[in-house]
Image 1 (cartoon, helix red, strand yellow):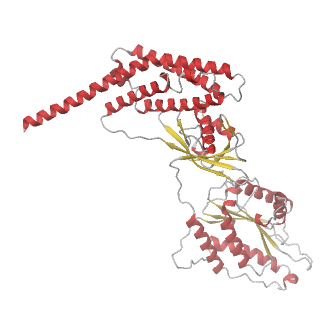
Image 2 (image 1 turned 60 degrees about the horizontal axis):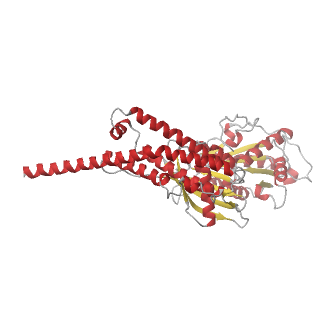
Length: 528
């Protein structure tokens, strides 16, 4: 029952003249209930109520739970649909992941009905849509040739039951009409074969007031328990693997896994809201939806994050920065479930990293600028850093080790660049304050050099992260180390000059603030 919009055409089908069977073949009305798995509890209640209301009639109501274990599910469904006099489609507004088979049942019944319009009960086979909290039965929208009259669609969009008061359901109510329609068909069947039922055509319709009130309360309780609204303040990835995933040196092998997205991933991955909430992807399809710029950090980071948690070692979080670099997200594992069958589920929450700013805006921005300069120095430019070209270029560094270090390094660079954007450190007014007037060409040259160097580093890093074996690793590693070395050499001088200039500027601003405070104190003292 997936959702499209196509109006159901109305046509009430009048029963044809019944085929009178010999008295030895007693008639029976077969009702097939088509529904989504998510609505099973509601359908069970409707099933029980129909059986209790029409105990006097030869009535058989079929649900998929009638299929015995070991039987061919598809063949059993097809056989039951071929024998059905009524296809009762129960539709609700609840979000479903099991639409497809309901649509199949409607389509199959439609074809079967065209081949055999008259059912075993003696009247023309029909659809009866029963809609609870939903305006239109979407399951019928996709099936060409399905025609149902508007007055044959029984819709209950809302209910109102006072506490302790039995609801009064009149003959004009959709629930009463729904039961009356089934009752009329049963009476029609029973009155057409006197010998079988000993009725002489005098079978009477059951009083439907009590069962209609009972069904109204069932529907009311369902509607009261449904979700009124649903929001996703944070995002979650649910990774499901068919068996316990293999942990390789460069992370978990997720090739055969499914990824469910819960929440809005449009700000971090190239996936719209409509394609994220409740949507499942194969791992390769998910990776294809991660923008090229984020793939080295996000995809490899998720694999390594899952590996660390499954091994029970290391940190259980990873950081990814959005394309605009103004938002960063911390990915952390909240739950790992392994079933007896060895199916495994890893829940990863994606939480936006937020921080508040206090104090004077200019000094706060200058403090962030100092932090940016020093963090780049500590991360890449000091010899003792784990990410220095000397350390990463050492012969004992394996492909798996290098991948792990690159993912961590890119994540930290993204965090620093996020702070650059967040503090608006590239605003012309601030750049003029830091570098002085008339320095546009110098600043532009530095920016161009930075952009060229960082792109070359990203390209070389992605080449390493895309390697699947040691073949060609040595040559690719040399290219990466060369790009990292060039990057460090290119930003060394600008980092040193930028940091020292901002330190001096911050010191001057603080001294200025202190001077203003002291001057205010003197003014107040003199006034006293």
